[in-house]
Length: 152
Image (cartoon, rainbow, N blue to C red; front, side, top):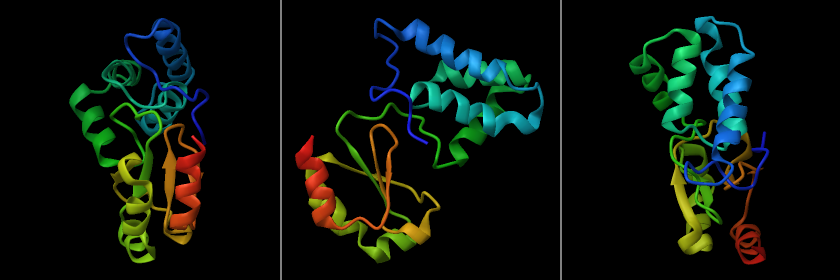
């Protein structure tokens, strides 16, 4: 599901406090149980476009889990963004299925706008890319991606 904002949360942005509070509110609506860790990550990432340190620490606090455990879990899932997405970047899955379906050609087609990402577990749609707002595109051809890059 795409992030609600095209621009990802930036700690120095004028609306940073409101966006972070929105993420905190989304996490706070969840029950305080260990099995809510992934839903909490998803709620925070949906609100912010990625998972900054403040969001991960809030998830740990809300769920009453050690921060080290929460960070370890966050790093285990390639679907979770631990770095702020770059405006105008195209994230190309480089998992085995996408590699076999032509991810290298997509990276070449997008040029400096391409960023390699780990497997997105969407092998049936290979090759897969997503943009900086988490809009997903499957079965992408180099011409398709080049047109998307040029349209921005």
